[in-house]
Amino acid sequence: MPATTHPTSQTASFDVEALRADFPALEQDVYDDTPLAYLDNAATSQKPTSVIERLDDFYREENSNVHRGVHRLSQDATESYESARKSLARFLNAPDPDQIIFTRGTTEGLNLVSSTFGRMVVEEGDEILLTEMEHHSNIVPWQMLAERAGASIEVLPVTDRGELRMDLLPEMLTADTALMAISHVSNTLGTINPMADVIDVAHAEEVPVVVDGAQSAPHMPVDVQALDADFFVFSGHKVFGPTGIGVLYGKREHLEAMPPYQGGGDMIDQVSFDGSTYDGLPHKFEAGTPNIADAVGLGTAVEYIMDLDWDAVQAHEDDVLRYATEHVQDVEGTQIVGTAANKTSVLSFVFDDIHPYDAGTVLDREGVAVRTGHHCTQPLLERYGLPGTIRASFAAYNTHEDVDRLVEGLQKVRHMFG
Amino acid sequence: MPATDTVTDRAQQIVDEFSLFDDWMSRYEYLIELGDDIPLLEEEKKTDENYVHGCQSDVWIETELDEDDRALCVQGDSNAKITKGLAALIIRVINEQPPEAVANADFDFLDDIGLHEHLSSQRNNGLKAMIETVQERARQT
Image (tube, rainbow over all chains, first blue to last red):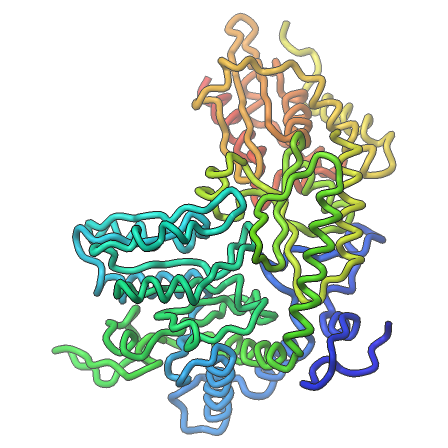
């Protein structure tokens, strides 16, 4: 159906065709006359025109450094940058924009927390609790910290269906647990973890929780206060924003107590050769010239998201996932990996006798963009005894037609390799 | 027997064969067939030393120098069929060639048959590392 109402009105109901029209990259052919079916949104999302134009406008009309110029352009750039921070605070329902730290993305956010807060709270003999479904970026920084501190890594297992063993959580939170780091949504399985419950149980043992929100922020409204998360990190490029920009939210008492992550300009109060004092939040954690334009673009992206009717978007995303699950499992020889009761927008699967790389190569030639491999979750795939999976991941703009294209591609895979 | 045709001759032969197919699907089907046709690498040759790790698929490569003929014998395998087909093409052009010819071989012919993208490091299927391994071994013999 053609669009009759623009989806960026808060009262408009959800119209997927109108939404698609906002994303120019979706309308292209790959390999001559083959239209693109973009199903790699867990890796990165496409960008709406409003974000693309905002970046263009910024560089054409406002480009200047922030926080240090008295001149007009610098004031404009600073205003746009800080206004983006306010949008991000609203996006996460953070109590104060000062608690929004701009980072390069989820990975940098996790490294920032492990290098500052982690160093403060993790001591020799302590334990850091992770889960079996973590992305490498929520494993490696903690391993580096554990090695430095003489601490150990403990791992909360997952079930065959890909759900956390919540029954084991209380006993895994010991007197030695210094912190817990956990993904809100699994990038490989799509499992939505019961984050509020996890945090409740951890807090009862006085264990702070770092939430990797890379895969949840694109698919659900996040309220960091309702979750009571100590830290929440995500990447801009997965929420329709630019690459190279992300957000770290932290509780004020933590952020204030933490030492700076990097030293440099823009994060100091006074500098002399005898020593330096640091600026307050959020600047203490934003050394050097920040990624101004992309922060501004991210602000536009989350405003775009907040203008969508989220009940309708989620109903649509659930419908597409359900449709894809049914049709993919009907293809001979496929097996879905990750069948949690509560899932969002990720469908991982394998063929019993076809390598994911072979399947991915054929799907690519058919214009269907999926990801194959271990998705940076090697320990999780090892738990399932798989070298990799084929992962189709959806965004609000995906349709049944995209899924049909995937299924037709899989039939071709079956024909070529079966 | 040392090879009588050169790396370039064999590459040209492959390009000629692939020119018979006019769509990608038949090219890939032929590639898969070529992979199926190469002799299987015995399990005992799938050693750590012969293993080339790729992010997407795994490759094993076995080389042995025939001292009398100064020819490098190359065998390979992969757990993905497309990767194995590509390995078969690469092996076909360098197998039983003098080590110097192997070390200096280029694989631009893959470009002519529309398969060069599989050698990009972004694909990370182990093929690029396989070529580097074989050429390094050829240089050392």
